[in-house]
Structures are given as C-alpha cells and as structure tokens.
Image (cartoon, rainbow, N blue to C red):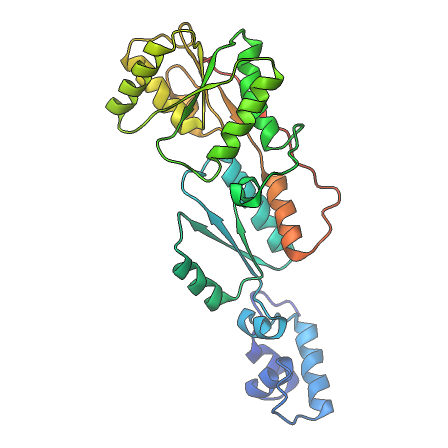
Length: 308
C-alpha cells in the first residue's frame, strides 16, 4: 500500500471499517467480548495486509514474556570484547524481532527484580557469566575461546624470549579475574614457563608507580608484564616511565582486550584484540531457542606495537 512508518491500531480500524476498540479486542483475542466471525476475519485480514505488529506489552501478556532480552555488563568489562559482543547480540536479536536492553555496573537484587517485574524479559544474560566461579568448571576452548586469548598473550611474550612473566592485576576483583588469571597460569604451564608472578597496580598514578617499584625491586628476574586488560597495561606503562624504566628494553608490557587508547601511548601498547560478535549472536540464538549451527567463535589476534 506504499505506507511508511509503524502501522497502528487506528490504521487497521480504518481499513476494516470498525472501531479501534474492536480491533484491539480482536487482535488481543479478548474472551470477554462477543465479536462476529465476519468482523474478526475482516480485522485480521486488514492487519495482515497492512503488516501490523502488535504492541509489545499486549504481546507479552499473550506470550508470557516481552520480546526484550536484558544483558548485565559489570564495571571493568568495557573493552572490545564487550562492545563486539553487544553488537552481535543486538543485531541477532533484532533479526528475530527482539530488543536488547543493556545494564551497566553492579546491580542490587532489588533493582534487578523491579526491571524483571516491569518488562518481563524473554531472557536475562550476564556478560562472561559462563566463566564466573558460580558456574563451576567449564570445558574451555583452547583454540579460539577465552582461554585461547589468554594463552595468546602469554605465548607472545614467550616467543620473544621472556620466561619470567608477571600478571599485573587491578586493585579490586572483577567478575572474570579468577578465570583470567587461571587461564594465564595454565598457558604458562603448557609453555613450560615458571608460574606467573602476580601483583596489583592500584590507582592513583603515584600509588601505581610505588607498587610497580616495590614489585620489581624484589622480582629482578621479571622481564615482562602481562596486564589484566589495556587499562592496567597503560597504568603499568605510566608507572614504568615515571620510574625511568625503559619499555620494552628493560621490561616489556602487553595489554589485553584492545582499546583505542593503547595506540596513543608512548610507547604504543601491544595487546590482544578479541572479537566477540559471533559469541553475542550465539548467545542471542540460545536465549531464543534457535539453532546455532554455522556460528563459531573467532580467534583473537595480537596487535603488535612498540611495548614488547
């Protein structure tokens, strides 16, 4: 009919020659209303011809949930992994007539429950939840999964002759800290390296420099820092520069889960790029009960710059 924009109940009412209320009763299949079979057929035919899509709330009442999927993203998970995952999840849900709602930061149970009660989501997801301790041990993919990305970081340092490596960690636990450190330690073991040293690089800048200085003073054999993420890597680079330590000549630094800021540092930060778009698409299909055949995670890759 050459229309543009969303078709409304009023459009269907006009096309079928009945009131807007009658259209609502028919399309919502209200059992309290007595409407003739002829009128019902006329309304449903008009709705079909116009391409009318029922309002989400009305549809939620019939289906038992809305067509909204909620994704909770904890603080400290705002790298390329998060951005690409959300992009894939959003696009795949949209392709199946669903909407994504992203919530950032720590959410108290009461606030979460209010969201659930208000919108009755089709599913509630948490970014990276499969790797969190509450889910117990998992069969990890060392070819192109999260463990493989951790191994890529440690392996890049080992290939350049570094055998004594330290993990630079944030000053508070993130949901994936345990899994991240565990995979890195296992990667070192598989490469025949000594167990990774570990230390925290806190905020602010002065505290970070003091922590790095104290650590290196007692771990003179360490020649490389594998950072928890790019944020910690950049804090480490700043601390080393403040201390007069040359990078990479004295100590090499590698980040994880690339952000744009690493390319702006001096020296520019070597890091691990992770594209999780396919993981987002897989999560969307799993939430909707759709076959995921043909979708496989993409392997991470090293972004080689000047800090290693």
